[in-house]
Image 1 (cartoon, rainbow, N blue to C red):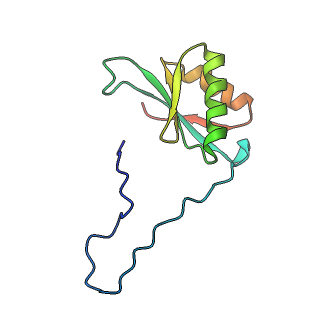
Image 2 (image 1 turned 90 degrees about the vertical axis):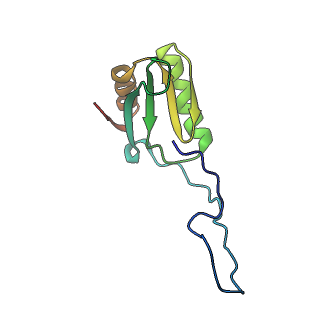
Length: 114
């Protein structure tokens, strides 16, 4: 994951003396209904000291709603985790259990990766 926080993405140099860079506004995205969400559940072991982490991506909506979903999944699985960079990270390999939980709650979810 790239950790670039450059507000001037896409602009390298401008010869126009009247150039004014327009900063994109951080618009608040309304949270889509669970039936409209297209979530991906995958397992990751890279750069984690051999430990496996289940990652849920594809959530479209407010960060507070994502944190509520992450908290619910952590409680149901009985493990730790975090919400970072619009992803839910769950410690351990819980792909099948998380997939079943999401489908029961009405989310469109599928396994991703190998």
